[in-house]
Image (cartoon, rainbow over all chains, first blue to last red; front, top):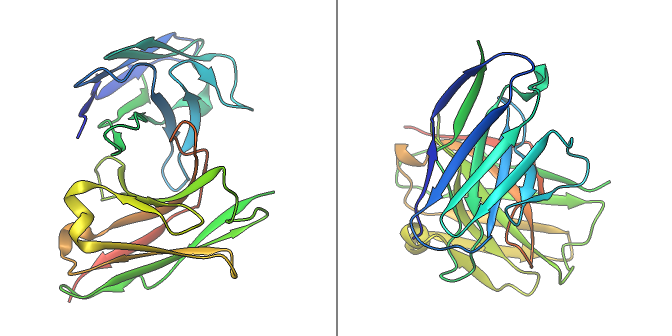
Length: 109
Length: 120
């Protein structure tokens, strides 16, 4: 399986901060990467697919970048509703085994 | 508006079979443009993809779970199901069903999740 490593595992940030989360793949996955936001008691929410494509309805303060093995999710001007855990997921179809990273929890400073 | 809803027993005994069903409303599970997937999250741990199924029954599973997993689709009831055999405490988790576009293999719509505990 392709391994996905997220860093840091925990981020403490303030409202209005710009936050960048990183995700590294154990092998080249081109741009086959998605990002999700997950809050306790809620279903995970797709934010970004194809490394940088914003899912419909997701605020433009979220952006994704990267290719190959290194990717990032940036949240501009952190809002109260953004405090959550964020997961990356590789969507590379060969070999066809989908894997998530370990998550980064964004908490209020 | 499309919705996915998981259902099934919340408590399963060790060595027995975990069975969950996902009912899809507001969209057809027979759509050729989507897979339908199961994903779980053990307490305090990360999300873990279990497997995916297409409308015609084609499946692919996480390699480490493949020997214990079976997924089936019921197009007449717009449902798909998960069976996980020989469960242990390590299989206790919040189980989600989700929609997976054929192109992209990400998960763009999710159910609310069903908590399953494995305990005697």
